[in-house]
Amino acid sequence: MVFNIFSIKHKNSTPANSAPVSSASSITSNEDLTTPVKKSSIPKALSKFLADPMRSTNHPDVAQAITTTSSEAKDLLRMERVGTHSHIRGLGLDDALEPRKSSQGMVGQLKARKAAGVILRMIQQGKIAGRAILIAGPPSTGKTAIAMGMAQALGSDVPFTMLAASEIFSLEMSKTEALTQAFRRSIGVRIKEESELIEGEVVEVQIDSSVTGSSKTGKLTLKTTEMETIYDLGHKMIEALNREKVMAGDVITIDKASGRITKLGRSFTRARDYDAMGSDTKFVQCPEGELQKRKEVVHTVSLHEIDVINSRTQGFLALFSGDTGEIKGEVRDQINTKIAEWREEGKAEIVPGVLFIDEVHMLDIECFSFLNRALEDDLAPVVIMASNRGITTIRGTKYKSPHGMPVDLLDRTLIISTNPYKEEEVKQILSIRCEEEDVEMTEDAKEVLTRIGMETSLRYSIHLITAAHLVAKKRKAAAVDIQDIKRVYALFLDEKRSVQFLKEHQDEYMFNEVEESMAVDSSNANDAMEL
Figure 1 (cartoon, rainbow, N blue to C red):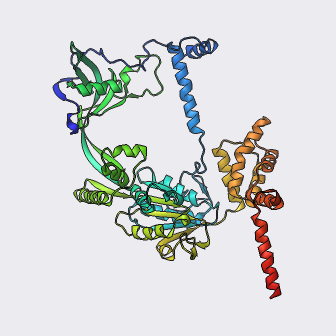
Figure 2 (figure 1 turned 45 degrees about the vertical axis):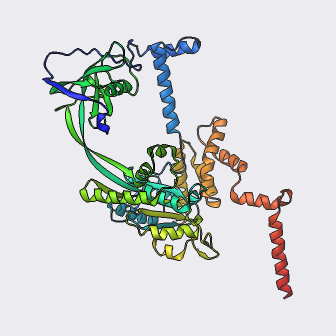
Figure 3 (figure 1 turned 90 degrees about the vertical axis):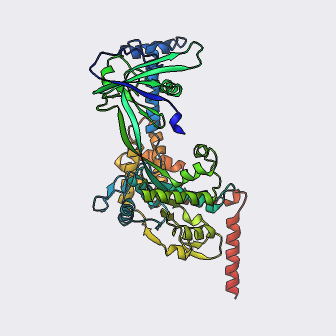
């Protein structure tokens, strides 16, 4: 049981304004600077270190300067990571679900965004589950962007799983098992539990070792604004304090059930202990009231995580390695039964999430038949699918169907259509991407890039932004100009120019299938003329 992790005994309680308790602590922290450091000496120390690389880095001035520089570099790396849809922050709707022309990174597609907003509102209210929505439209019309906007609007509390249809085809597990895991990953369980916490400011940590060193005993003095208490510590509790580097002046919480220690920060009364401290040092107020408090903790986990933990011994390790394998149906049935009991007792509630399947036309007929059955289950999320195909063959059959999906599954879906962007919308999207990628561009260059996007594709014009920015930096220009756009346009071909180049130089390539097909077409035409 988890209750024997540490032994903790309530010794005595005295008012906080009683005789002062010594703040000597037997725990030392490597991160604390015991030598006062002047702020003005840090750059000087770093310059001395750079001038003499053989100088020891144990000097506090040099260590502090190097730590500051590395933390700034980490922040820069994190901020400069820009993805295809990193500018999307929501659906861009007002409180009445009316779409704005340009908001939260979304531009145009007013009808599609309003329809997605209605679905989003129903998901948030918990009134919709086990439904299927299909976002259909030509390429580069913002289907994935709408799904990303829904994910951002839902927040972190509602499970949102993104899946490409080709991901489920694997030799390690069956297609139905991969879909089942995706479904279970999209269903959350909100579990409520009450826990007893000890929260206070550390006045003193006193650890005594035996003569042989085999056992340790200790005392921990905690205080709030109203009381002060001394606790006797067990061996594992002492190890936890050493691991968290707890010292006098820290404000901590201790979970009595599990023995977990959480360091909330340093007390404001200790703010002047050192002249320089790490960037992660946080100062908090001394807690008020009683030391022992009851707190309701809410955990949100997915059904898939519960499945993995209960599927085998030490199954929680598979959550980190990803090697979940196939999970037996009996395990899932037992978990469903237990979740149903918790729902009746009020201990847990189901949070229906969203499963987004991109390129859904890549699924085969067996997967579509499984989806038909899975959508009727009690524990089913909202399934959002996206496809850019027209009337095409269903994978695994010889029959053609709209969007490459069976008609019976299409009948169960709510279809949201997207239309090609207009010229002013393309220009607005390019402006948003320039701002996201921190690229200065002149208005004339944006006009040229917009025209390129209308003639080729939106993705191609977006890809030219960073390339043109690098060319502009090469000539030390402050902003991207028309000549930079022209240069990268000449360097990188779009799809239409690449096809034209292949047609002109097809004889120089190894395999010449275009010529054969053209020859077959010409022979068929000649046969038709003879008939």
